[in-house]
Image 1: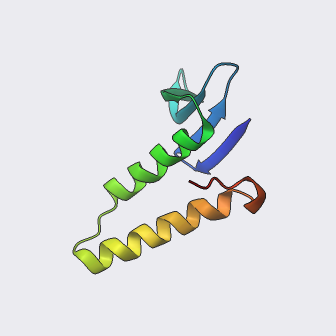
Image 2 (image 1 turned 30 degrees about the horizontal axis):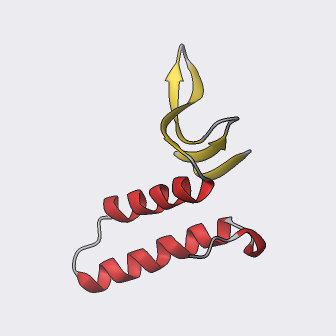
Length: 87
């Protein structure tokens, strides 16, 4: 299974784990390379969301709250409602 999060990140399921991948150029060809591995899809998705929040250039509390809301909404729209994780 491959879940494309954006042009720079995707989650890929393998036989043993879930991996976050990013594109790299190797010998003139774009290839997707894993850089983090997880036991569950939820953990991989959570790490991707947290990363986007951390690197967002928001300044101040109100911008940060708006950024978090936008990022969470974007990721929520990627996952069909019947597959959304709840804690």
